[in-house]
Image (cartoon, rainbow, N blue to C red; front, side, top):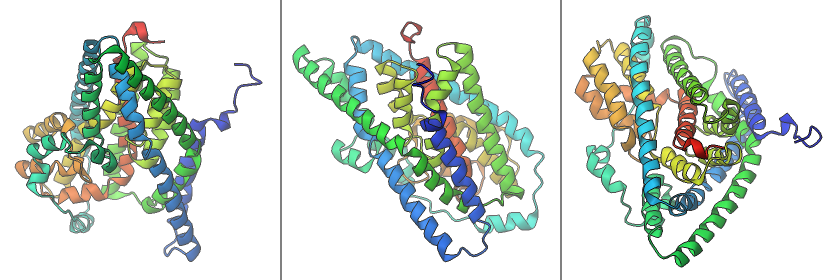
Length: 420
């Protein structure tokens, strides 16, 4: 591309959403300094909240219409269904490798780091008294409920409710079945779903073109809620959580460079829009369309990666749990003056790996899943309420790690011969 036709860097979607995020956070934190928000400030925040929520809803509405055709084409459009199954197994293998590595890393580093934490008794008392948690019924968190939730009575209703994992499993079942029907009906359906996927990618590009505005609105509201007062025990918790997530994210970039499968520059460029959308919305699912676009347009990964592995990762893989479960348990133990033994910490780390793929589809499900675990190792269950209340800022960096890990798994499942 010549310099005359090369788009300005300021017009890049990645640059626009990044600037929107930084400007929004700065404005929000500035507004948070007002002891009593003025009518103008309140009206501005209310308007930006509507704008940001409308934009993120517009992005979310593309997820299932994009995921379904991509999965069907990625699975049934291949020449060998066994090869597709092997790709899925390889993806889960990489997920487990990353989870175990992060769990071991966070357990070792966090334990040493938390030894330096000295808490003010008065401050910790106020923090403990603020803990509120509505613990769901044991049935809502049971293995039985999770397994039954994977098999929707009505796949259309599951799609309408936005419960992605049951939709993904049903779509995979449909796609593998389509791969076994006669050539003529299979080709007709694949043609339709390819057209649907291409159309949805156009819609995604339109939504992301408005990303700078949407992210600015979301970040302003978020920055006003966070403020700048992140000192003491809360600041320490934020610091440990954020630094460990950033180290893990950086480690994935190093692994990409070492693997040599794709250019590190292209990997970063493909992830910028998805990363910023994810941090702004605090949802790796909301960033899935941007991930697919980056993997398709920048990395030029094959359909098995863009249409099969990425939706699968976004549905079931949360690498961040291997970090924040450990950090959260150590923080709550310190906050309540409880000595968390090495064996119990190891149990927390192991649980973050084993239960990673079984997060229930309820608000704060990843944290509420720890309720039985806390009870079994002697940590107060109400401490989870504190972690939920403090999750806003760390969740941005948790989402960044999840998005980066999803793209890494997609890259690593592609045979070297198929990497552009």
